[in-house]
Amino acid sequence: MRHTPLHESPSDPIAEGARARAQGRPKDACPYPANSETRTAWFEGYDGVPAEPTHDPAFAGD
Image 1 (cartoon, one colour):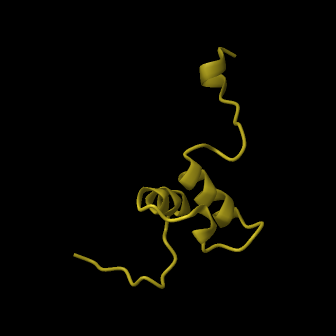
Image 2 (cartoon, helix red, strand yellow):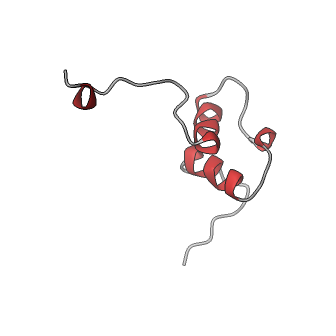
């Protein structure tokens, strides 16, 4: 089994944000810099919703 050191960046910030919420950590515990893509992704995972609505023609009947 491979152990990942705690100081390494997670490969999936969305999963990391979701895990933080599940562990009861506050939202301001996000480790990523302001205005970064990884911070936005972390918040998506924490909140459980995409940051911006996306249009998927497969679901829109286009």
